Length: 245
Image (cartoon, rainbow, N blue to C red; front, side, top):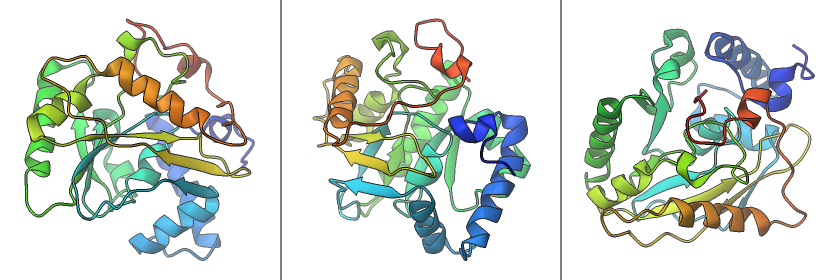
């Protein structure tokens, strides 16, 4: 494997190649001495591999929350999805229905969604609402409001999905903004947690507020956050009507 390969530079992989890249990632972690069958070791392996630094990390054991991060690489969910044992992750069907890919993701609890289908979105939100409604506290959902990899600084508000806020209304669960710097093998990968957003009134459009909070978390970093390396398609899908990848 060459880490100079374009996909390893942008940390984004198409569905067809994702299995091969996960095999390569598995070898990297195994060579580091990580037992990938051990969830704790896998989490620590990711933290070491990507030089992860957590900022303002909350206690996730005694409350429910909807983690709503920006989306800047295909490793975002792999990293954030290991932060707690009871996180359900909304993920595109292209990944969830890939049986070979799922063999490498046994630790993750995924809820598949067709991003072009309102019916699929409704079913996913219903499943997440049920998950958050189970006692005791300490259950979470992970949703990427951007819907696809893209630069949060360039996204139009119309490009941001409102699903996290709909779920917040239905489940009486606060939305927790999270900024994740693009994972990188050479530099620190910083993850910044914001304060929980007040649960919005039904039908209130909170997309602009969420985007502002994510950018504020990004701007809080010193030194400044690294500029992400994106594929051409991910660098140019910021406007309404652009395809989701």
